Image 1 (cartoon, rainbow, N blue to C red):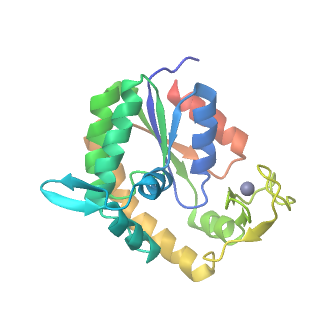
Image 2: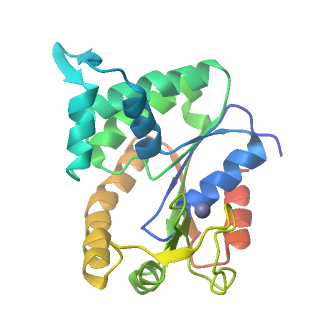
Image 3: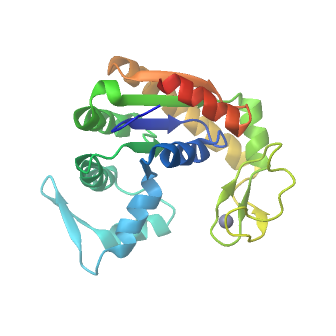
Length: 231
Ligand SMILES: [Zn+2]
Protein backbone atom coordinates (compact mmCIF):
# COMPACT_ATOMS: atom_id res chain seq x y z
CA UNK A 1 0.00 0.00 0.00
CA UNK A 2 1.34 3.39 -0.90
CA UNK A 3 0.16 6.40 1.02
CA UNK A 4 1.97 9.50 0.00
CA UNK A 5 1.23 12.91 1.32
CA UNK A 6 -1.49 11.96 3.73
CA UNK A 7 -2.52 13.43 7.08
CA UNK A 8 -3.66 10.98 9.75
CA UNK A 9 -4.91 11.95 13.18
CA UNK A 10 -4.87 9.26 15.90
CA UNK A 11 -7.12 10.01 18.87
CA UNK A 12 -8.29 8.08 21.88
CA UNK A 13 -8.56 8.20 25.67
CA UNK A 14 -5.43 8.13 27.82
CA UNK A 15 -3.96 4.63 27.67
CA UNK A 16 -5.47 3.74 24.28
CA UNK A 17 -2.03 3.48 22.72
CA UNK A 18 -2.41 6.39 20.29
CA UNK A 19 1.24 7.38 20.59
CA UNK A 20 2.39 3.83 19.80
CA UNK A 21 0.09 3.54 16.78
CA UNK A 22 1.16 6.96 15.49
CA UNK A 23 4.79 5.87 15.78
CA UNK A 24 4.07 2.64 13.85
CA UNK A 25 2.25 4.56 11.10
CA UNK A 26 4.99 7.18 10.84
CA UNK A 27 7.73 4.59 10.48
CA UNK A 28 5.78 2.42 8.02
CA UNK A 29 5.01 5.27 5.66
CA UNK A 30 7.93 7.60 6.40
CA UNK A 31 5.58 10.27 7.71
CA UNK A 32 6.42 13.03 10.12
CA UNK A 33 5.20 12.15 13.60
CA UNK A 34 3.54 15.13 15.21
CA UNK A 35 2.99 15.33 18.95
CA UNK A 36 2.02 18.89 19.82
CA UNK A 37 3.35 19.21 23.35
CA UNK A 38 6.79 17.73 22.63
CA UNK A 39 7.27 19.67 19.37
CA UNK A 40 6.09 23.01 20.77
CA UNK A 41 8.06 22.32 23.96
CA UNK A 42 11.22 21.84 21.90
CA UNK A 43 10.64 25.06 19.92
CA UNK A 44 10.12 26.98 23.18
CA UNK A 45 13.25 25.54 24.79
CA UNK A 46 15.34 26.43 21.73
CA UNK A 47 14.14 30.05 21.63
CA UNK A 48 16.66 32.74 22.58
CA UNK A 49 16.18 35.14 25.47
CA UNK A 50 13.73 37.89 24.50
CA UNK A 51 12.34 36.00 21.47
CA UNK A 52 8.66 36.60 20.77
CA UNK A 53 6.03 36.20 18.07
CA UNK A 54 3.28 38.68 17.20
CA UNK A 55 -0.16 37.18 16.75
CA UNK A 56 -3.07 39.49 15.89
CA UNK A 57 -1.12 42.48 17.19
CA UNK A 58 -0.25 40.86 20.51
CA UNK A 59 3.29 39.94 21.58
CA UNK A 60 3.87 36.46 22.94
CA UNK A 61 7.26 35.90 24.61
CA UNK A 62 8.67 32.37 24.52
CA UNK A 63 10.04 32.84 28.05
CA UNK A 64 6.54 33.62 29.39
CA UNK A 65 5.12 30.51 27.73
CA UNK A 66 7.93 28.44 29.26
CA UNK A 67 6.98 29.76 32.71
CA UNK A 68 3.30 28.94 32.13
CA UNK A 69 4.24 25.31 31.48
CA UNK A 70 6.51 25.15 34.54
CA UNK A 71 3.49 26.10 36.66
CA UNK A 72 1.62 23.14 35.17
CA UNK A 73 -0.77 25.35 33.16
CA UNK A 74 -1.51 25.13 29.45
CA UNK A 75 0.24 27.29 26.88
CA UNK A 76 -1.82 29.99 25.28
CA UNK A 77 -3.83 28.35 22.50
CA UNK A 78 -3.18 31.19 19.97
CA UNK A 79 0.53 30.80 20.57
CA UNK A 80 0.40 27.01 20.17
CA UNK A 81 -1.60 27.20 16.96
CA UNK A 82 0.66 29.87 15.50
CA UNK A 83 3.74 27.64 15.92
CA UNK A 84 1.86 24.50 14.89
CA UNK A 85 0.62 26.12 11.68
CA UNK A 86 4.07 27.34 10.70
CA UNK A 87 5.71 23.96 11.25
CA UNK A 88 2.95 21.87 9.64
CA UNK A 89 3.00 24.12 6.56
CA UNK A 90 6.72 23.43 6.23
CA UNK A 91 6.17 19.66 6.50
CA UNK A 92 3.40 19.74 3.87
CA UNK A 93 5.55 21.90 1.58
CA UNK A 94 8.29 19.28 1.74
CA UNK A 95 5.71 16.83 0.37
CA UNK A 96 5.73 14.77 3.55
CA UNK A 97 2.78 13.00 5.10
CA UNK A 98 2.03 13.60 8.77
CA UNK A 99 0.65 11.56 11.67
CA UNK A 100 -0.72 13.48 14.64
CA UNK A 101 -1.41 11.86 17.99
CA UNK A 102 -3.40 13.43 20.78
CA UNK A 103 -4.27 16.58 18.80
CA UNK A 104 -6.76 18.19 18.50
CA UNK A 105 -7.68 17.91 22.17
CA UNK A 106 -10.38 20.55 22.29
CA UNK A 107 -13.12 21.85 20.00
CA UNK A 108 -11.29 25.18 19.57
CA UNK A 109 -8.10 23.40 18.59
CA UNK A 110 -10.07 21.25 16.13
CA UNK A 111 -11.71 24.29 14.56
CA UNK A 112 -8.31 25.64 13.55
CA UNK A 113 -6.37 22.41 12.98
CA UNK A 114 -8.87 20.55 10.75
CA UNK A 115 -9.28 23.38 8.19
CA UNK A 116 -5.47 23.79 8.10
CA UNK A 117 -4.92 20.08 7.33
CA UNK A 118 -7.77 20.12 4.78
CA UNK A 119 -6.17 23.06 3.02
CA UNK A 120 -2.68 21.52 3.00
CA UNK A 121 -3.50 17.87 2.26
CA UNK A 122 -7.05 17.92 0.86
CA UNK A 123 -10.09 16.48 2.60
CA UNK A 124 -9.74 13.10 0.82
CA UNK A 125 -6.21 12.66 2.19
CA UNK A 126 -7.20 13.39 5.77
CA UNK A 127 -8.20 10.49 8.04
CA UNK A 128 -9.14 10.38 11.68
CA UNK A 129 -8.52 7.18 13.60
CA UNK A 130 -10.32 6.96 16.92
CA UNK A 131 -9.14 4.23 19.31
CA UNK A 132 -12.10 3.28 21.46
CA UNK A 133 -11.70 1.84 24.95
CA UNK A 134 -14.34 1.11 27.59
CA UNK A 135 -14.04 3.31 30.71
CA UNK A 136 -13.21 0.16 32.70
CA UNK A 137 -10.34 -0.74 30.36
CA UNK A 138 -9.08 2.85 30.40
CA UNK A 139 -8.95 2.88 34.20
CA UNK A 140 -7.23 -0.49 34.32
CA UNK A 141 -4.60 0.44 31.75
CA UNK A 142 -3.83 3.81 33.27
CA UNK A 143 -3.51 2.51 36.80
CA UNK A 144 -1.00 -0.08 35.54
CA UNK A 145 0.89 2.21 33.21
CA UNK A 146 4.59 2.70 33.76
CA UNK A 147 7.28 4.89 32.35
CA UNK A 148 11.04 4.57 32.12
CA UNK A 149 13.38 6.49 34.38
CA UNK A 150 15.65 7.77 31.64
CA UNK A 151 13.46 9.33 28.98
CA UNK A 152 9.95 8.92 30.45
CA UNK A 153 8.81 6.69 27.58
CA UNK A 154 5.29 5.66 28.47
CA UNK A 155 4.79 1.88 28.54
CA UNK A 156 1.26 0.60 27.99
CA UNK A 157 0.08 -2.24 30.16
CA UNK A 158 -0.92 -5.31 28.20
CA UNK A 159 -0.01 -8.96 27.73
CA UNK A 160 3.05 -8.07 25.69
CA UNK A 161 4.47 -5.64 28.24
CA UNK A 162 3.33 -6.92 31.66
CA UNK A 163 6.58 -8.81 32.32
CA UNK A 164 8.89 -6.03 31.16
CA UNK A 165 11.12 -4.54 33.85
CA UNK A 166 13.29 -2.39 31.58
CA UNK A 167 12.51 0.15 28.86
CA UNK A 168 12.64 -1.59 25.45
CA UNK A 169 14.04 1.61 23.92
CA UNK A 170 16.82 2.61 26.29
CA UNK A 171 17.08 -0.16 28.91
CA UNK A 172 16.37 2.04 31.94
CA UNK A 173 14.17 0.87 34.82
CA UNK A 174 10.36 1.05 34.52
CA UNK A 175 8.53 2.88 37.32
CA UNK A 176 4.90 3.87 38.00
CA UNK A 177 3.88 7.33 36.89
CA UNK A 178 3.54 9.80 39.75
CA UNK A 179 0.28 11.25 38.46
CA UNK A 180 -1.37 7.89 37.83
CA UNK A 181 -3.56 7.52 40.92
CA UNK A 182 -7.23 6.56 40.64
CA UNK A 183 -8.48 10.08 41.29
CA UNK A 184 -6.38 11.86 38.66
CA UNK A 185 -7.06 9.09 36.15
CA UNK A 186 -10.82 9.51 36.62
CA UNK A 187 -10.47 13.27 36.23
CA UNK A 188 -8.39 12.90 33.08
CA UNK A 189 -10.94 10.49 31.69
CA UNK A 190 -13.89 12.80 32.44
CA UNK A 191 -12.01 15.68 30.86
CA UNK A 192 -11.43 13.57 27.76
CA UNK A 193 -15.10 12.49 27.49
CA UNK A 194 -16.29 16.06 27.90
CA UNK A 195 -13.97 17.45 25.25
CA UNK A 196 -13.95 14.64 22.71
CA UNK A 197 -17.65 14.16 22.03
CA UNK A 198 -18.00 17.64 20.46
CA UNK A 199 -14.88 16.97 18.37
CA UNK A 200 -16.41 13.86 16.79
CA UNK A 201 -19.38 16.00 15.70
CA UNK A 202 -17.00 18.59 14.27
CA UNK A 203 -15.24 15.95 12.12
CA UNK A 204 -18.59 14.87 10.71
CA UNK A 205 -19.56 18.47 9.95
CA UNK A 206 -16.21 19.06 8.25
CA UNK A 207 -16.71 15.98 6.08
CA UNK A 208 -13.56 14.24 7.33
CA UNK A 209 -13.33 10.44 7.26
CA UNK A 210 -13.55 9.04 10.80
CA UNK A 211 -12.79 5.37 11.60
CA UNK A 212 -13.47 3.91 15.02
CA UNK A 213 -11.09 1.08 15.96
CA UNK A 214 -11.33 -1.32 18.91
CA UNK A 215 -8.47 -0.16 21.11
CA UNK A 216 -8.49 -3.03 23.61
CA UNK A 217 -6.95 -5.46 21.08
CA UNK A 218 -3.21 -6.28 21.04
CA UNK A 219 -1.08 -3.53 19.49
CA UNK A 220 -0.46 -5.47 16.24
CA UNK A 221 -4.19 -6.11 15.68
CA UNK A 222 -5.08 -2.47 16.31
CA UNK A 223 -2.45 -1.55 13.73
CA UNK A 224 -3.89 -4.02 11.18
CA UNK A 225 -7.36 -2.53 11.66
CA UNK A 226 -5.96 0.96 11.18
CA UNK A 227 -4.27 -0.04 7.91
CA UNK A 228 -7.57 -1.53 6.70
CA UNK A 229 -9.40 1.67 7.61
CA UNK A 230 -6.89 3.76 5.66
CA UNK A 231 -7.36 1.82 2.41
ZN1 LIG B 1 12.84 4.71 27.79
